[in-house]
Image (tube, rainbow, N blue to C red; front, side):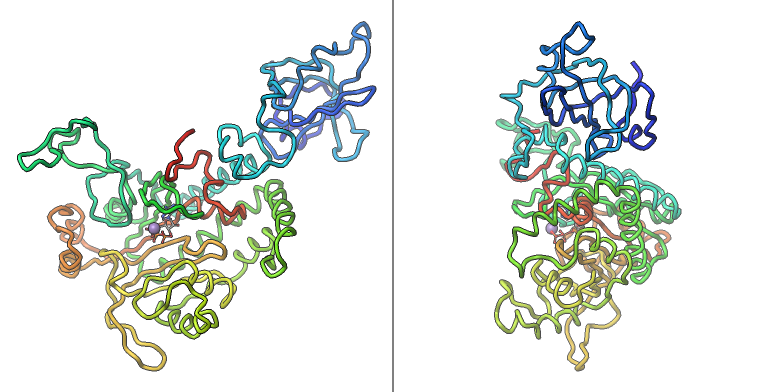
Length: 494
Ligand code: ATP
Ligand code: MN
């Protein structure tokens, strides 16, 4: 049976023709003379209304037993003439002529009632939540953003590099790792010293799920010029935050001949372009989420309400230049800020500390009121592969601090860090020395160091957590609500 998507049908509105749509019943309303069915098939946030006249079966109308099976959650195909709608709320509707019921849904047991459910409750039924307006909107936006990411890189001469998910290098230190093994969990083979003998494991060595594709990305960049990865990434961080997942998708471009400045320009252009793409292609879904958030804001205290709506916030980000400043200058601002003086920060700030999300958000939301790119962080709080600056940091007053590296973090309102990146150390001696200082065996990463041995070049790259981008674009508050099936501590049901 041929059928049309509701999105297509509402766009073309072929009034007067007979159409078939297939989807899930959202609501059913009955009056004395007619039954009104709102049907959604996931192709759009909008539903189509089907109207079934009630009356005797002899008059060619649907028997009441059939109408009874059309309940919220049931999957049906509806055929009928598309007509201009009499009622308010929709321009066209289907005059129901026949219905096929694929799968009924017992209305007493179906967990999704036609009312607003809490996000917490919906997380417990993640297998069904894509059938709600909010989650279907998020998933369509997520799709559009993923497509925009590939489009951006393809349009700009980057090659998509598939980096491995199982890795043997645990040297990167980006986070705690999940082990990959086929050894017995209860009786693993042991070495003479009583340790687990990984030489008998599947790969003949200890392996883990990757925390980042960057090191392999660098290998690609130093051959193909500009590459990017976009794949699943795993961190066993036992931190139950609204911004961390144990399994998330990371986008990591890596470019030969790019220095820190080029890297910042790329990061800014890239995020703005993909956000613009979502604004252009997800109008209905973003408007729905915008209204949803406006409702939510109303229940907040006045001082906690945000000045911009979701759509305004997205427009604001794509039409303003990001502020760029050094870590050292940021520390100056933070140390002299009102919350620092009133001791309102949970963590104190001074040169050398890693910025907490409260500090990042103060800079972005209170001080600059714009996205911020912070650069030139202290060497000791950043990864070993970042390129060292030529001279130690100094501030406006001529005070000197420690050694810095060419790092850059992009900070967004409501999110904090959305991108972390850097120019990479391309000097073999400096890189090996740094590895030894932080306790990483250069031998273990011999293949990585080979790029600096043979034809080394300045290069740079960054990592963008895809879900943090989706979080920002959808205006949701919890990262577990922007991925279909979240993986977090004690959460892997679906
Ligand atoms: P954070 O300080 O927020 O934990 P990070 O410094 O560990 O981040 P990086 O190692 O630089 O982050 O990773 C690059 C990007 O990946 C981050 O900017 C962020 O967008 C994303 N990211 C990192 N950890 C997670 C996570 N557990 N869940 C989702 N996204 C993450
Ligand atoms: Mn982290």
